[in-house]
Length: 170
Picture 1 (tube, helix red, strand yellow):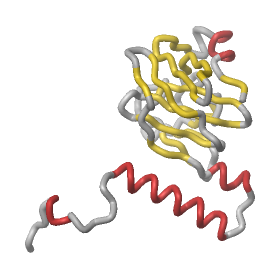
Picture 2 (cartoon, rainbow, N blue to C red):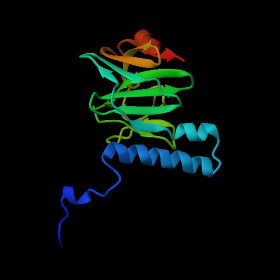
Picture 3 (cartoon, rainbow, N blue to C red):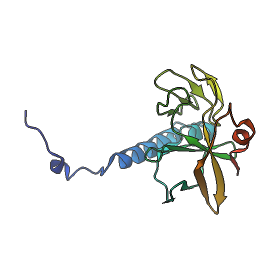
């Protein structure tokens, strides 16, 4: 069997994994609209991989999401969530054993693939081996952007008041 090299795919319309994910998300949204899913159901399906529009050592700037859902920045280990008129910045790692969390749009929750801990979109712990909510970062608004400060790191069990206050009202 002849192996194809990367150069052999010059005619492929998808340039990168990010393009594939973006186009797949758009296709899912279009399918949801075609099937007549309500706006709440369509919003629950929203997620995408992103890169910050600006990064400084401890701060990463992202556009405020326009619909409910999650944006995942794997490079900087940040999740930005818009949910019910609030925006949050989370650590990508599960607080139980630091495995990257996944957004499960059909269940409207985050899940750890290693030990199956589940979290609400606002980071509140639901079930599994973890013992606390998702770790939040400090956030602030800058125009139409959310600034996530990874130096402001809040654990629900150690910084309960700061953890509870670490969100933007939209």
